[in-house]
Structures are given as C-alpha cells and as structure tokens.
Length: 425
Image (tube, rainbow, N blue to C red; front, top):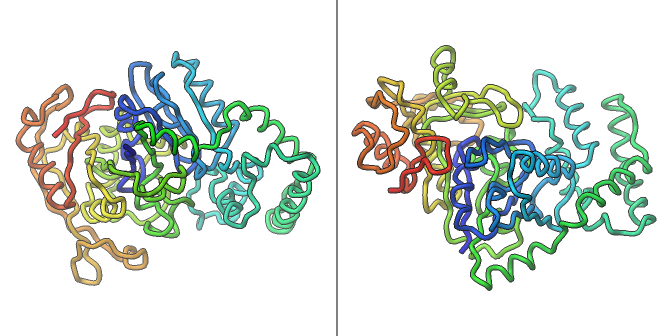
C-alpha cells in the first residue's frame, strides 16, 4: 500500500504533522521532490522539530526514511539535520539515499543569492537555497548524481571542468563574483562522498522488493499544488512538481501503486513568498490570524518570514485537490479560528465582472477578486475534543460547508499541533 501526503495550496498546510501521524503505521517514508527550501514543523513526544530534507517519519524506530531521486539533495544540510534530531533525543534514524539523487552544490546556493540580488524588486522571493539553479542544471544535464561521486578522479574532474566553464561565464560577466576552480569543486564532492557513502542505495530496487513484501509506504511531498511549475501560479512556483503523481517518478515506483492520496488543506490560507494569492488579507486582520495560527504563529519554518495570510480559498483548494487525485482531505489548524465571531470563506473569483469557481491561469488570476461567504464562528477552544460530534455545531457547519464546496471528503480534522490531536470522520 502506497499513500501520498501532499498539499492542496501554497505549502505550509501541515503536511509534516499528518505524515508524522500516518508514519506510525508505515514501514517506509520517502521525500520525493524539493529540497531544503521549505520546512515541516512537527510536534511529537520528543518535542518540536523543523525538518527541511528529512522525511517526517524519522521519529519512529520502525521506519526507514528515504531521500528519493527527485530530491534536491543538500548533503551538509541533511546530515546537520540528522545530528540536530539526535541531539533532541531522537534515536538515530534509518536513512537511505538514492544513488540517482542529484546534489545541491555550494555554487547553486551562491547563484541563487546572486540572481535574487540582481533582480532586486522583481525577485521571486527565493529562500536562496539553490533550488532553481539546481533544477536548471538537472534538466540541462550538467548536475551531479550521487552515483558520480564514485567515478574515478579523471572522469569526474573532466566533467567538473565542462560544468564550471558555464558557471564562470555567469560569475564573471553577469554577477561579477569570484570564479570556481576544478580543484575546489572536486574537493567539495569528495567531502560529500565521505559523508553520504554509508547511506547510498538503489532506492527503486529497494522499494520494488518492499512492495512485493506488502510493506506500507508513505510518499511525502513538499509545498502544494499552487507551487507546481506546470499547474501552479507560474512563474512564482517551485522548480519540481509538487503533485502526488510525481511521487512515482521521484521515488522510482509504478504510478498505479499509489492507492491513497491524502491532500492537506489548512482551515484558512497562508503562503510564503511572492505570487498570486486571491483571498489574502492585510493589516490588523492578517496580524490577528497570523498570531493565532500555527503552533507558534504563522512564520516560515525555513526562513522565519511572516507568512502571508488569507481566508480559506475554495476555488484554489478544489483545484489543488483535483490535481492531486485526492482520496482524503486532512483539514488542519482548525483550532486557530476559535477567536472569530464570523469567518469569511472565498467561494468564487470575480474576473472582469464575471464570477467563476474554476481556478484560472496566472494572467487572469492577477485580475481576480475574492467572492466571500461569511459563516458564523464558534467562539471557543476546540483543542482536546476527540470526537467529531462533540465539536460545536458552527464548527461542524464550517467543515461541512467547505467539504461541499471543494467536492472532496474531509476525513481527518486537526485541532492542535500535537501528533494525536486529530479527529477522524
């Protein structure tokens, strides 16, 4: 059984908690795309953790955690993260790294920062983790796979020379920064080899055998549907597919093996970075929601930046769930809304005087204005409630209204940040 846990919106939906919770019954948890540019905040019996590359199953000693071939692998960050959770009292996790994963190089991070600096006010709001330059190199076929660390020195240095010839043109003539050398890049790769060698595995073969044995596998996605480079708010997107369908590619399994897609929606909207965000709110209204949201307020787990805030967007969420192939919706951070007398919900977009409930392309999205329906709040703290029928009536009405609007079943409701603060429907 393979289950994918993915986001319906702009990321930050609470996927880490849901993966951590579902991993209790999983044998293998896989990160299949993205890199250390976004984080998952998890609160469990060991404490509070912000993961960036590690799969959210690392807190169970019965799971194997895998870095799939679709991940932008920043080796120093991965192993710094492993050390940090060990220092937090977590037993050393069982980690495997795909021999086909490609590595984020220090020059990717530099180029990311230099480009944001060059673009200034027209920048993409990058986390400057090297993700866009990394994926650019991957698809230009000049990236470095983990398996290449085990090539002979002459072959590897020849490739490095070809690659940095391109980089140095940019560094010298566009960014006016110091140039790369073959020896410097080779030394970095040898450091990475020493760190990662014990963990390298043919992940696709490992998973093939695991599925034959009937193991439970969790695919953990990063960000959400709105950040997908094909179907999201292009160009303000990430550089790898955020959809469950890509999980098969980024892990190396047949697509028909993915039987369940748990799509995570937050009970309101939030986003980090630039891009279209129709239901966005501002000022004191946004500050109040940001303060009440999350487990310590709505701030990026990787950047610490205040998240942009908005009301629940049924148009974007319906579209996001459809793209993911949703079988179950996990509805998170519902407890944060208990302070509100009334709760607006975006049910449509007005574009050029017409209202639509279908999510448009970015050029039309730029002109969209939210059409809101206001629902009564429940004005109480719902943390600690474990049965759906014990939730306040207005709270249940809010859930059921959104479920009807998006057209996908909400089967899990999260009413607190802890691992077991979940209500099943």
